[in-house]
Structure formats: structure tokens, C-alpha cells
Image (cartoon, rainbow, N blue to C red):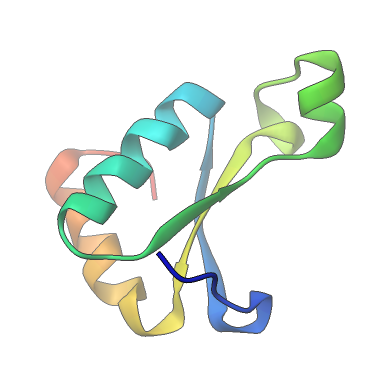
Length: 77
């Protein structure tokens, strides 16, 4: 998998870390390049919600398709 530039990515949603990892797997299984970005304090102190939730990122060109997949999965967008 290639690494995307930050300027090419869009924050799709923010979720607890385990849920974000599962969502990224679902997006990737549909051919959508997806990544997680976790807040540094969340990693160190174990925060997992609110402003410290794990962000799910997708390429700007995949936002519409990824959003529809989230709706189909009843995941928070």
C-alpha cells in the first residue's frame, strides 16, 4: 500500500480505536485506501473517545463512496 500525502486525505469520521481499525478493514476490503490517525495523548494515556478518538482518513476522491459504505454499515459518519 502506498502512503498518501496529508493534503490528499479527508477525515471521514472519528471513533474509538478498535472500531476505527475494523472500519478501515471494511473500507480497504472495498478497494478504498483508508488510514487511521491516533492522537498522541490517546496512545500514551489510553484515551479513546471525544477529541482523542481515532480518526479514519480516506482519499478525497473516495469520500463519497466511503460515506455511502458507512451508511450501508450503519456506522457513524
